[in-house]
Image (cartoon, rainbow, N blue to C red; front, top):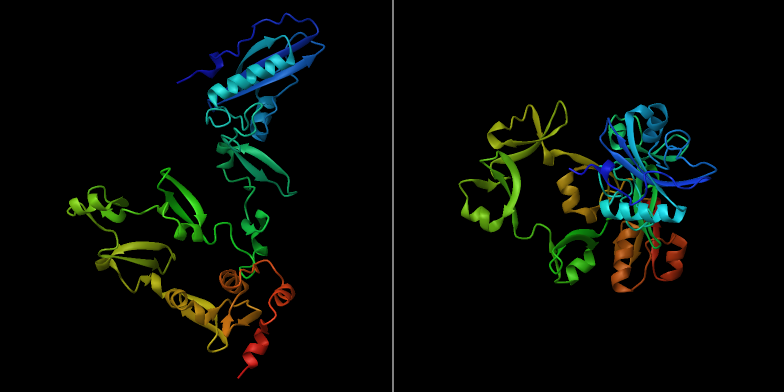
Length: 366
């Protein structure tokens, strides 16, 4: 394992300048066994000020706090240069050589002089405080559970201007699309890499296949666990593998509501509830009122149900649309018209023959 504290920047151990100190440094945390690399310029002094006046430019708050409060927990090496530019170039070479922005053994979250070569904070986590201020803490400190992740209670949505983030309680499925809605995970057969692409591209290009193509979900009787193996391996080793759903049933524990996979002979209906028995509340188009239906019924007959908070329906070309999203998809294919982010007034301006029906009017129709 590399001892980065002994790696050189190509500088000098002693400073030859009298009124300034330009230096590169490597810090070693004796407790976490992690490093930090940087460079610094000091005017009016011939010696460095690391861990006396200067405590790195790291944005990891607990690391910086520890540097100030417990400097004895750290070891460091200093190398001097004749100018600030020379020190910065040496730092950049060191960062590129050891990929400190990606290297889990470093606190560094950025690569010197190269913002494209970052990893959004190796070894650290972006958090948000009560005043909406963003800061970083190390992975170890975040794991304690006392800090709130920067994306907590947020959701990414897809807009005409790209991906935007909004509070989760403001998300409205009638007008918003999640970041990966209508996208699928696929395998690019030309590059051999997995990617997430629009469903339309996946269906129209032979370049992409499903990431599980050629694989089968099985239960490994040797390792006693569920996994995926190539179909050929499964067919040649049926004594070892069986399709994971064979002789198994997915249930919920009635006491804990925990999802469990059981062998069929272990299914006790007094203790477990079958997963398909779970019901959801929807708005029934046929009955024109709220109804409770099973999840299977809802997904198999989605055209019969709308969300409980629906306020308007749309009728176009003799078809009743239960949401703006469904209308958008239809118009995109038939009229090459984009409606997804439009208000109802804008939709009526774009499509003269559309009928907008409030839920109250819909319920009063014969």
